[in-house]
Image (tube, rainbow over all chains, first blue to last red; front, side, top):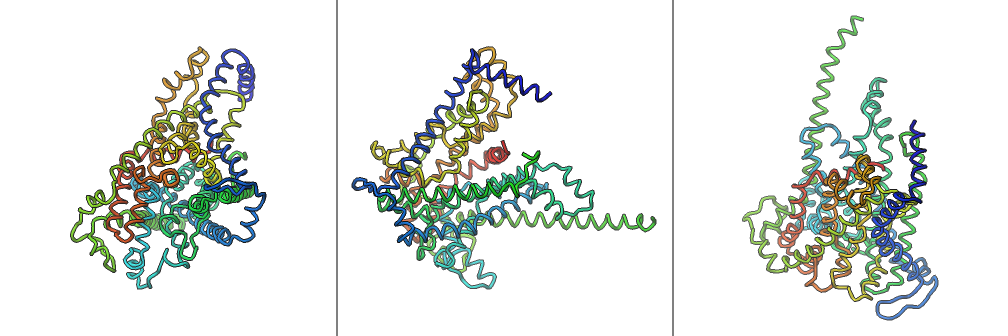
Length: 312
Length: 291
């Protein structure tokens, strides 16, 4: 029955594209998406190609451009210590921040999925940090991290612990920024919550009937059934972590000792402070290749751990 | 058999006791989680109402004494926040209109009109979700500067009139796909203008999704820092986000004023959130459902 219906619509589609009303529909369809396609060409595809070309030049804001072949990439991997540093900082931050963010968001979503009273209130409070403009949260976290008068050292004192220098010391700057990144996980949490609410009740009942406890239910139903959501959140937060910028700009200026020299911030400096557009474009492409490779790796391995209902 | 019947009441009682303990624990977790997540906001508010002496007391105290409301007028005296607000809105309003118009058109074309290659094209546009700004920022900037439009609002507005962010098209497309087809199908076969159908049938049914798009695109302009930073260098043109960053640079240690300035940037967003909370949540949830 279903197949028959699909076939007829398929035939109808094919004929409609080439005749009267179908052609009109197709024409309108293309017209409607035209601005978006133009936007894609003008702000994504075009610039991507252009920055690939620029990456092989020494284009300076003050002055012209010369073709320099692979020079930019040779400098990067050969002698540019700051490039290596930026890569280290960004990878370390992402490795710490992404898994923790995903786990905390997942746990908060599970908490909200427990049919609590005042659920909308809790949901709103958990979500709230992520709407605070990053610039404002960077300023307030910097003040909380203040070694002399900050809130966090106040807490440590209450607990009888020593003062920390947080973002003001090269050892603790990255862990501090990771801590801050656990604060604004609202959207991820909401997406997890939607995923959790989509888990069919009868699966939980099945585990309970078999004598399973809450932990069994979590491991055999909750986690497997939400793996598609985990994948989605994982990919998006890896991409976001690799593009961290505002924290470095507002809070640390890349320091101390370049220990928070995020890749995006280094690129910004090269492009807009030093005017070295060619080199910065090469930096951009390297970042793009890294992110693309990571996404491919995550997606490739995902068929081993992501469960799609219906075996798709 | 007898042993089993005896065991049931005791087990049931134990289970109720367990349930109560479990529930209490959950509420404790939820409340302490809320407290932790609200802390930075409360800290910001608290610091914005203290005078310079009290702010530099260690260990920090929570209640301002005296309440220094004067910090807020002082912010307006030191930095032209009203102008920054006006600039931000001058960018925000046309950007949001452009995003709503062009992203709903695109979402309509990608969900309810049929044309060859439609889903492939949509898939290609979706890849931009994963594209780092690092790889497009520089050429885009160079073109705007060749056009002599750096230090104007154009580079910050125009992209919104070309579909805006793919996220919004995706969100609306998800919603449009959920609307029953029979209505517009019939109208389409009768030869109705597709734009009429969008306007008369699809959009009125999509109010919640449209409101989500308005909210999220407003927020993304309001919160944007990198683009204004690159494109605006005359401080008469600054947005609120840039103004706050400038303030942070100028008054490095006057935390009470800095916190008051931050409050001024955050407050409208919080207000919007309180009024329209469900559209935030529903909009996000919509994009998480696999399509």
